[in-house]
Length: 185
Length: 219
Image (tube, rainbow over all chains, first blue to last red):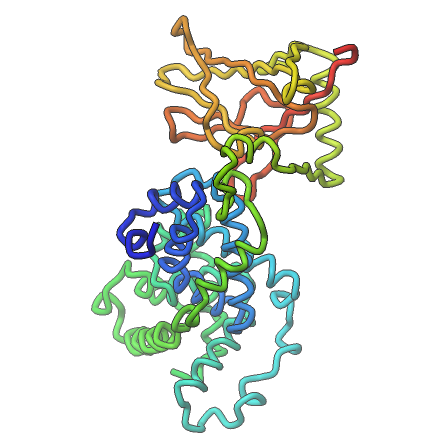
């Protein structure tokens, strides 16, 4: 199958053709969802290198489990769930979630006087640093809500967590970010 | 940690409008709007150029995946032969091994609640296989299929309910070892075997049923 044909297929058709051995079909699945997965992984891990490793690992794992994808029409959600799990495993392995505030440089130590002009890169780095200090589940919920723009319902379907529990995680994340990002307001 | 006023949280969740907030809270709510807009704007752009090609190359390098035909199959070899000769391995964690040992004991020592075993053998590929009868109650179902590691997780093994009483069953030759499986109702609903003694999380939020098949001596 040619790549141009793959681009016109539904997700379910691409999964079917991937299972039949079509490299182009799985490549198209990757192209459709790589940006979403990559954004999530980069914002969760705080680094582009980590994000590439995480998403590649997740997609290889997904390919090896593709026969177990029970709703091929929603393969994107399935890939997201796998990526989110790989992300959490990766971060737990690095024990980042257990860093205390004392272990992470303060914003001031990293960037000097918060009154300095903040360029885009500086703001992004501050946000990444602030997110990194949040507990893993709070960070995940905040990123899905405010970076990926998902509704609580969509988040619940992806993570298998109830809407009230997700709301609580997002609220706790905002509480945590309030102090850390005070200088950006 | 200072907590944000719950009314601002509700506003940020889209449950309250700005004009619903007391005047004293509106400025803070608008600050949060600006901050969250900045968070959204600072989102990473996405995967770098060529990332998809690197993923596909890594998958090709990793070799054939279960249930997925080889991306570069031999044109002269039928697919069923590829499947039949593909090496397989069973990984058992130390914790799972305890549960599996219990399941194995159940298979050997007493009739299985949902699965009956009979020592029937056939030549060639099936020489070491044991016929296992799978049974599941699925009243109102139009079809029930079995999927497991032994079918590369394809729901390709149809169970039957000839008398229409909602009890679906089928016999399947399985090699001795530990197998994972699920039933597929009407082609879309995947369920665990309610009678399975042991199950294991499949990593995607569901439970695979576990079955230990042991060779019967003298067969």
